[in-house]
Image 1 (spheres, rainbow, N blue to C red):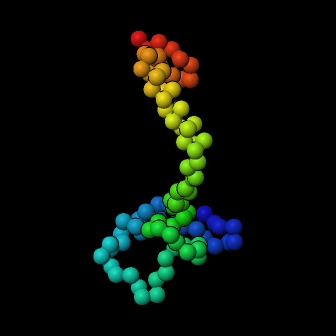
Image 2 (image 1 turned 120 degrees about the vertical axis):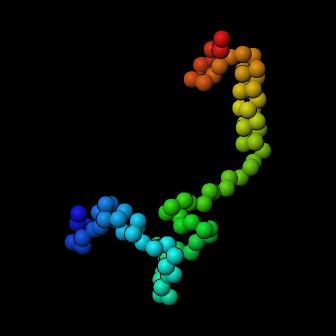
Image 3 (image 1 turned 135 degrees about the horizontal axis):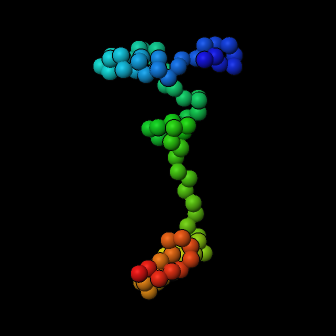
Length: 92
């Protein structure tokens, strides 16, 4: 495998063999640097691995809409109808 700039890339089998052969108790080098894109991190995991969830504003109309949806599903299911596929059907 070759990268776009001509450097040889490591294959998955070779990378797996190196990971399995590594000693997990070996201390890190003093000059070791974390694998990041240089941006400051807010959490324990890097952004490319698992981005932080974005918060949304809890406005009154949005809360009413979510409440109405939940109430509609409870009423429909309480009446014995199934709305799994989008159309109300009798669930018996």
